[in-house]
Structure formats: C-alpha cells, structure tokens
Length: 97
Image 1 (cartoon, rainbow, N blue to C red):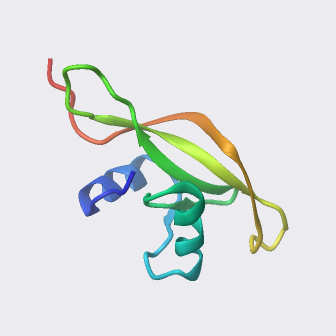
Image 2 (image 1 turned 180 degrees about the vertical axis):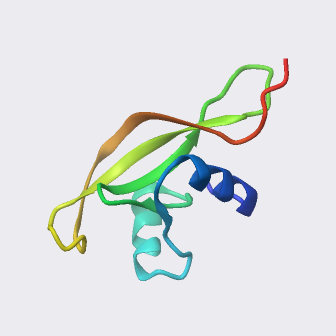
C-alpha cells in the first residue's frame, strides 16, 4: 500500500523504522518485486504496510509485513523472502463504532 504523509507519520509513531525515500535507487527494484508500496527499513530488514480490511468499514488499521532481511552486518544487502506478517498492527485512524 502506498501511504500518504499522514499515514506515514501514524505508522512511524507506532513502528520504529525509516521510510525509504521515493528517489532511492532501490525503490524501483522493490516496486518491480512487490508492487506500489511505501517501504520501511529497520535493523531487521524491509517492510510494507498492508491494510486490514473489515467489511463495511473504511480501513483503519494495517499490518506490518516483512519482505526482506539484512544478510550482512553492515546493513547493506537485503535478501528477499515471501511476505511474512509480523503481527504488528498499526492504527491509521480512530475506529468508530
């Protein structure tokens, strides 16, 4: 999922990572592999946020999905793997009942 600025801010307030800048050379390659997303990096690897769909409601939460792990101690080389849900849920907006 491609996030807007408000969604990025909400995500970063709940998930300790950095956003990979749109103009970073690796973004084009990641988009070929994983589609249009906002990519996040932390000390463990590469992540995206996938919306948690609730029928009849506007998506208010997303789950952090792991796409790649660092394969060196210098954090310079990522090894991709199948998408793995992390169990980390990000609240993007208040849920109204």
